[in-house]
Length: 224
Image (cartoon, rainbow, N blue to C red; front, side, top):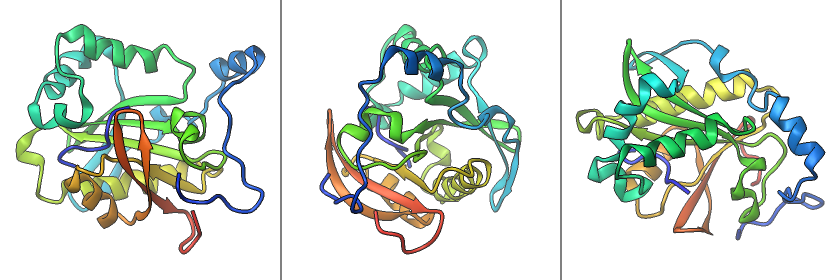
C-alpha cells in the first residue's frame, strides 16, 4: 500500500462498532461496480486555498501517465510509494483504480492551472486498510504525493490537505471522518497531516510498512 505524501489496530472501536469485512458476495461487488462510492469526485470543482486556486481532477490515463510516471521515479517519492520502474508499472497501479469498482479515484492536483501533485481519494471502509484498524461506514482516505521537489517543504502539503479534507467533508455528507496512513518514517507527511487538522490516532502495522493512522473528524473531539 503506498504511503501518503512524500514531501508530504491498536485503537479500540466504539462499543458495538465493527470493522467492515471485505469478503463481499458477488451481487454486492456488482452493485459497487455501478455505484458512485465517492459522490462524484469529478464534479467537486475548484476550491480557493491560501496558496492558490486548487482543483482535484480525476486522472486521464492517456494524458497524465507520463507525468505521474516521472514523479513515481523520483527517489524521494519512491522511498515511500515504491512504484519506480518502467511506465507499465505506474500504468498498472492507475488502471487498477480506473477499471475498478470506484472505491478509489486517482486524481491530479492542479494548483493555479499547473498539475503539481497526485492524490488518491478512497473509501477507507472498503479498503484493505479496514482489515488492520477499525473503520466506520463512509470513512474516506487520502493518499498524496507532491510531485516536484521545489514544491516540497514550504507548507503546500498541509494547506492542500486541509483544503481537500474540507472538500471531502463538504461533498460527502455521509462521511464523518477523513483518515490517512502515512509511513511512520515519513515525518514530513505526518507533520503535514497534523498541521492540516488531523490528529494522531495510533500506529498500525500494514503490509509493507508501519503507519501512523491520522484522523480528521467532521466534529471535533470525537474518539477514534
